[in-house]
Image (tube, rainbow, N blue to C red; front, side, top):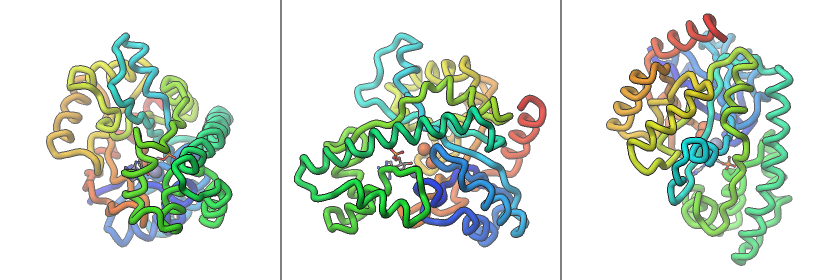
Length: 294
Ligand code: AMP
Ligand code: ZN
Ligand code: FE
Ligand code: FE
């Protein structure tokens, strides 16, 4: 039996309601899932209840957007030419902890500043789009964490792009003309907030950090570990089999746990729930560590 420890609901930028994810997990034959919405825990209670009904084990999680630049500053290495993405996953979190909710509000603020900049960039490129179009779509889906996938959906609806992927490739992907960053949270604070809720912190999709080379990746993970990182997400849809192997070895060498998941977003991304076939033992080890030290 397998588990999937990385997925999104309509509480952030997925297209399935939290309770629907439990039913999809059951249909996919998964033994356990973790809901890891971007910057919010709003979907956790509904998903937990539906999982209990479906007989699927549930792990309360979150995925915090953090500032990758802090790593390169700390280790005194110039950042890669195109700064990548740093997301910190939290597992076995107590979702109502005030420290985490304070971070949630900060990250919502950061999005409220960033999103209109993307819209302004799009308008400067001649795209007729208003931020209200995006807010309306997110609200209709039940999300308060408004992100680029919502913007992409509006671009698709208005006929500016052929697909969600096309929207990222042409306009709002990292380094594209309308892109703007939102990830201003120091990684150490993200990890500490997760620990403050009794949770464990895992570095999501290491490949997205866009490290210069293997040596830089090693240094980056050592840096994150010095800030308290507990685990590395070795299995992820974006990773090749060779990368899964390499990140697994890196985790073992540094004494880190491993996590894995699909990063399922529903209809917006061609990703199958459970596609990483993460063994239940991965979750068992995580659970044991959370009980022991969390
Ligand atoms: P945001 O947090 O608002 O910057 O949006 C980040 C989310 O956008 C990610 O979690 C993905 O769901 C999605 N995303 C990022 N890059 C791409 C891409 N190239 N194609 C499709 N979706 C993407
Ligand atoms: Zn997402
Ligand atoms: Fe992510
Ligand atoms: Fe994700």
